[in-house]
Amino acid sequence: MSSGRCGPAPSTSPSPSTPRACESVPDTPLASVTLRTLASHALRVAATNSRRARAARRRKRRVNSVVNDLTTAEWTAIKAAWTGCAYCGASDVPMQRDCVMAISRGGRYTVDNVVPACAACNASKCNDEVTGWLRRKRLDERTFLERYVRIRAELVAGAMEG
Image 1 (cartoon, rainbow, N blue to C red):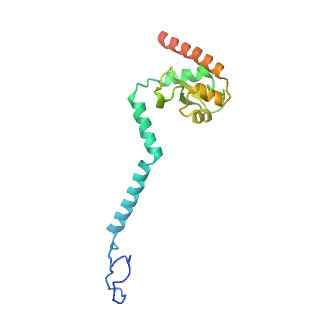
Image 2 (tube, helix red, strand yellow; image 1 turned 45 degrees about the vertical axis):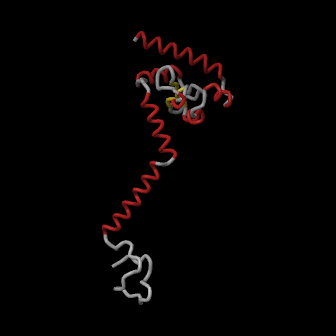
Image 3 (cartoon, rainbow, N blue to C red; image 1 turned 30 degrees about the vertical axis):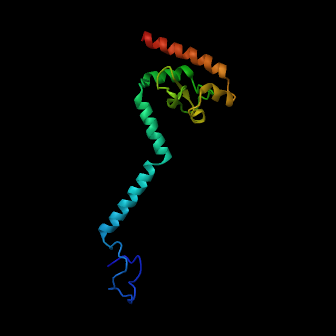
């Protein structure tokens, strides 16, 4: 039996055995599976072509194209040296790795470029240049830069000794 998408054929009386004018999809388990498969494929294609998905793929390519040599031990040492968010000083929230020079601007995940940041500062900074962002947020730019240089020098010196 047909699915009855278009109505009865012209100049015929509708009856259960009358064929439809535009037979589209028979009512079979295979046809319904095929329609579900096509629908799920369309959703997956839409999801993989979304702006967010394309941006994620571009970011992954940028990260994979350069040397990112930050180890777990180095990240732990960086968090211990900063004792909180490098920008706002919050210490009671989980820290995220933030690149001082954003990956989209040529930065890498290295001891020289990564600082701990709270989620709010990391999301707010996005890929902005750090000094301009600090000024806009009215955070102390000079204190951050002096501390950044001092901690980075200590970490690099410690890495060369160890």
